[in-house]
Structures are given as structure tokens and as C-alpha cells.
Length: 414
Image (cartoon, rainbow, N blue to C red):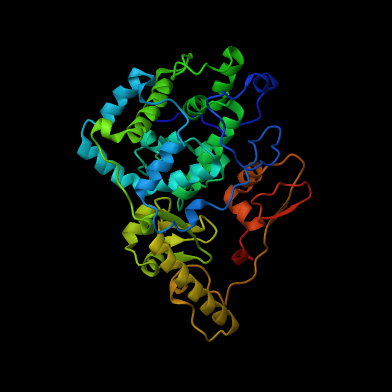
């Protein structure tokens, strides 16, 4: 379980910048240029391509291809680098049948996270980080305890722009939380230049890891588990991550088989443009409401707001059905707004929100970018996600400029 000391990265001191030279045998994956960071808040988000998770998978792509991609993106030590790696790998697979069932249950999330890691250029081992944290289960949050498959605490969620309230817990939102974590891991690597230290930072907090780099310099490539004065649980966290990666590297060595998943069952996000009930969304997606709820555990009620979270996660074939239904309903909604006697579309009519034809115009919020501000800081200040800011303002591949006016609300909020 990760510690509450996890905070998002800040700019490294000049000492760290001077000594942090990437190891020759661990080249950094290439990523798009980043927005210039503020002096104190976390660095701005990289300018990624549109999320791979929202793009339909190619028909021939299955779970087998995902495992091959994952192995090809591994960047840390293999099975034999440390005896404890094999110890934990054997623990994970001591019951092959149980392990295979656990991995089958988790595979839709594994594939989704793999796509996000690929987008951000994060080492493949971190796709398996939720296995170490929660075995990909959406652990509910209680009081100040971590929650979700990434085991995030509320303070980290707030900085990521993930709301946590009575109706929605962003830590349990697979889509939003995964994107935030991958952004954070990429930032850690850009500062630390060693994926092992990235794992230490995720578990122990990046401030403590930065201090150790200042004191001891970057660790050598060997041993695989750096001999640093860190808590046992932090060293073990990295060992566990390398162990589950070891099983994926060579499943036959542990007498297990990795599952596959047809492309039409790969998870993707569907943007929701109008408020609706979860039951109505499930019906139009051709799903049972309980199955849709299971894939979207962040929703604490049956009501889905287009503002937060503004999206649903579901298999590709169901996503296509829902998108088609919304397209038809949107056309009907335009007719309803033009004529008071025209009934509302069925999928929106049972929501507690005001009907389309009666809803009064509301003021749309904006923000003027100040010098040194980052998307992370702005999103945090307004309790929205970085993804939402990028989408509303078409910022993918672009940098922020002082004086730039950013939209903070979707079009239907106006």
C-alpha cells in the first residue's frame, strides 16, 4: 500500500539537475514537449496525443498483442537480477489457477493502463503497478485511507484535479486516475532519470527520494534494487513490481498462461454531453446497469453529470452503441429546444436536471493564464481535471501563453 506522502513533482534543485544523467542502458522513451512549469506547483502536463483508450482497437488486436507490447516496453531488471524477485514471483503464482483467474479478471484494466503508459512513454513495468497496489480492484476509500486501484490519498487526488465527494470519487475513476498517475510517473522520470527511483518516489514520496539523490547521487545500475536507506516496505514495493513483471516476461517459467481479450471487449471512454441516469446509459449501451456500475465505481449515485466526470468507461462494442444513441438523442434534443411541445429524448428525460427547453443560460467560467502557471495548477484551483482543460481548449500539442483565456466549462454548461 502506498504512503500518504505521495505528492506531485516540483522542480528539482540545481544540484539534482547537475547529477541526474540518464543511465546509458535505460534510455528515456520519447514524449511530446511539456508546458513550462511554474516555480512551485507541479510541472505542466505533457502534450499527449488523444488518449489511445478512447480509440477503437484494431480487429486483430487481442490480449496476446498487449502482453507482447508490454514486454517490449519493460525498462528495468529481469527475473534473475535479485533472488527476492523470484521469491515474490513464485508467491504470486503458487496457485497457477488462481493467478490466471485474477489476471483474467484484471485484463480489461491492464490493457487500458497499457495504452495510457504507451501514450506517456512510461516504462511497461508500471502498467502492473495496480497489481502490487490492489490487484486492479477499485478499493473504496474510508476516512483518510488510500482508494482505488492506484491507492491514491485525497491530497494527491486534489492536486491531480480528481474530485472526491458524496457523489463521485475520482480516485476510483479508472480513466481519470490512470491518466493522472501516468502523468505523475512520467514527471518523476524526467526529474530522476531512473525508473527504479520512480517507483521509490511513488511509494515513499518524491521529496524524500530527491533528498537522497542530493546526498548519495544516482544509484548504479547494479544491484537491481538500489541499496539506499529507504524503509523495507519501499524496497519491497519495487521488488514486487519487478516480480509481477518477471511473471509476464516468462509465464511458462511459473507454469501459468496469460489470458487474452477480444478487441471489442477492450475498455474505452465515452464522453457524456448531457446529464443522464446510469440506468439509461446502460440501457442504450446494451449493458446491465450493474456491469456498467462495476466499470465505473467512482460514481456514488445513479445520476451521471456531464460536468463531472463527464465520461463512462465500457467495452468498445457497448461504447459504439451508446455513442450512436447519444447522437440520435442530441438531434432530438435540438428539436425539443426549438419547440416546447416536442418531448425530450428518452435517455435524458428521467434525469433530475432541468429539461433542455427550460434550462436558463448560465455564465460560462474562464481563466486568464498568468506567467508561470501550469495546467496542473489551474486544474487544481478549479477542481477540474487536466484532461478536461486540454479537451475544452484544444491544447493537445500546444503550450500555455500568458494572457491566454481558457474555458473551464463544457458547452452544455452555458
